[in-house]
Length: 554
Image 1 (spheres, rainbow, N blue to C red):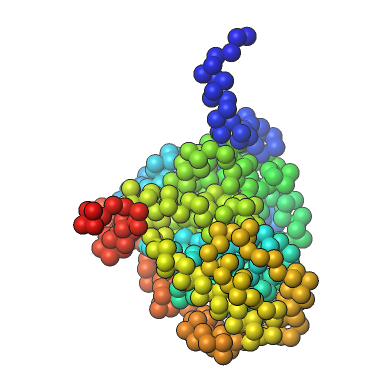
Image 2: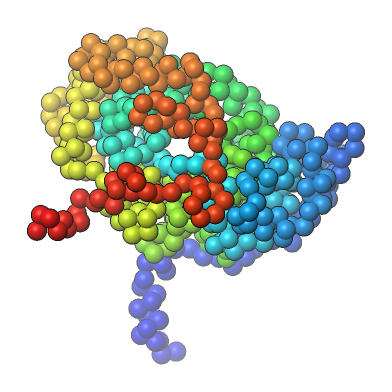
């Protein structure tokens, strides 16, 4: 066949480099509405759920049992389940129905019913509901701070810049596990250099992550994964009960924490049981609620390529964010995994969380160029900062970031690098040279950084653990090294760990360590003139991008 030149041109567009598949329900490659999904139902006898979504209690798997016993408001479930799903969906977008009223209903629903309700909404209606159902009134954003060399000087400088730009939380990980103490300390010091009160974590396997938290090097945890089928769950030698125990271990030591889940994980691991992605994810969200965890990182996350390949998959990603909010949980709504070659598609996927606002619009906006992102690359990275600022300005939307001046960024990066230099000196760790400080001050990424002695660094990182160093040693080292202000801020984080106030749902800190949470900053959206409004000083700051022409200076 003679080809159309128009089609030949279209086939060369970036969007054609992505992968797509038609629905295949038998293996779970369907976003929502699998013929194998259960029909919503519930039956309570003697204060116990004996039937749920068409399954008798004697046929429950361990996820069903956990959900029935811990995740559903049993007292109200039969009444709530009897409501028409369309009526509940209408309540979600009705500005005259309060969030509190809806929460009483939605926390009483089964997984199949939650999916049925959300599936009644189109994406615009879902965004309307997301705006209303967010736990914390004020939206925020979270950053990834990593690099391919696990260079602690660069991590500190990048974290300082990210804090200055407005991120409320930051997450790092490692290429080499033994680097973990360096990375955790670096992001802690760097973030507090940029702004007091930023929460940080180091994403690792759970035992090491908990240990770093207990030592005072981190403030929260997030990568505690839950799954929607038994076979996937036990593949990691876990159950909902063991994950609940782990969550208690974190919380009891003053660490804020979230579970992590995401549509498509069960398909990706080969055990979707023919169920739809959204139904299995609803089970994960309910598990999170039942475990008593304050929030959930979801939005497909690292599985995003799976739902993105099927019809309606990106809509379902929005749906899982909404269900999380319907269960009164903090949501870190992903946008943190690159999944497309198309800039148009990347932006469209994000707008559904960006426009209504979530607790954390990205659960990892890469504060580095993507070649340095050890979380396999983010949907947004350091090269997109100005685009993000312009989108906020264009649409009068608070996406959690703010304009910065180049000279301020240079100064704060330099201060963070020098603080790390002084800290390493005080702690007897391998020296950070003036050359490294200079490079980190002006670096775009790790390609601009001089190499460190990997063997010596790895040895020293392990010594931090063997010597029993804690966050207090970091405070002392910073103080003695001449960085008393950063020392005070790190100490402030440690104090908050003891107080535990920031374990409240959806909590972040302002720069005075005041907790901003769903308790004292409760979302009160009920239509125009209510809820979070971008205005006043905040709007003046966001619209004042440095590269806009100033008529008074022309």
